[in-house]
Amino acid sequence: MRSASAGKWLEIHGLEHWTHYYTDYGVSLQKQFFEHYLKGVDNGWSRRPPVLLNIRRVDGFAQREENEWPLARTQWTRLYLDPSDLSLSRSPVATSSEIAYEGLGQGVRFMTPALEQEIEITGPVAAKLHVSSTTADADLFLVLQVFDPAGKEVVFSGAQHPRTPISQGWLRASHRKLDPKLSTEYRPYHTHDRREPLVPGQVYPLHIEIWPTCIVVPPGYRIGLSVRGTDYEYEETSQSARNLMVRSASKEQKRGPGAFLHDDPRDRPPEVFGGTVTLRAGGPFDSYLLLPFIPPR
Image (spheres, rainbow, N blue to C red):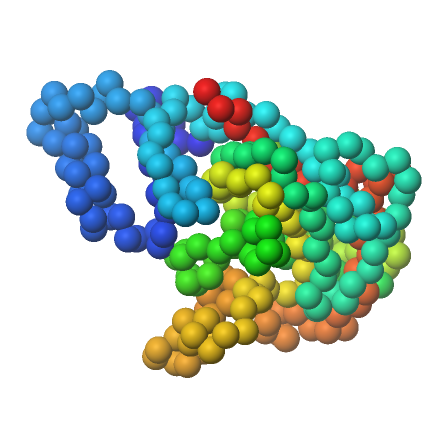
C-alpha cells in the first residue's frame, strides 16, 4: 500500500502462502509479469485490473478482479462488544460493563447471533478495546473466528498451521502508541519506538490491527472475536487433528502461529504479564470490532 511504483498489482490466494507460486496458476501469473517487463511482450498485463482476489468460502475459493485495495465499496461496520452477555452487535451498547480474565489465560469470546443472510468480509480488520490490568503490561491476542450452525469453528489450511482461524491480531499494551500520519481506523500503525508501562487499574484504549482476510459467511453461521492472553489453539480433540498439529521433525505441537509461540517466560514474565486483565465496553467505552463488509455487485 505504500510502494512508490505507479505500476503495481496485488494478488491474494489461499492455502499456504507458498503453494500457489509453484502451481500452474502461480507460474502462469509470474510468467505474464516477467514476459511483459523483461521481454517487452504485449500480453495484456498492463491492461489487467490491479487486484486479483481469491474469495474464500467455507467450501473453497472463487477468483474475482478488483480495481483497488481496500475495496472502494467496503461498508466499514462496527460490531460492538457487550461483556454482560459476550455478544457482538451492530448497535452501540448503552450500559457499560466489564469482564476480567487471566493475563496469561485463554480469555473470553464474543459472538454475533446467527446470521440471517450471507455476509462477505474482505479487507483489513481492526479492533478498539478498553482494557486495564493489575500489572504493568498485558499482551492481547485477538482471533477472528467463524462458527457453523452446530457451533464448530470453521478453519482453513494456512502458512503455519493446518487449522487456521479467519484472522489474528496481536498487541502488547505498552506498545500502544500510534503513528498519527499512517494510522487509519481500519489499519492502526504502531510506532514501537518506546515502552509505556500501564498504571495498574487505569483504563487504556487500545487500537489493534487484525490481519486482512476474506471469508464469505453463510446464513446461520456466527462471527466470533476471542480476546486472549495466550496463543490461539484450535479446539479439536480428535487424535487425527492432534497428529496434524505435531511437527514431524521436532515433535513440537503447532498451534496458532505454528511453531512461533509467545510463551518464553523471559519475554513474558508472570509478574509483568500474569495479572488480571479487565475489558470494558458499553456506555463511554466504545469497544468494537471493525469489519470490512462487501455488498454484492
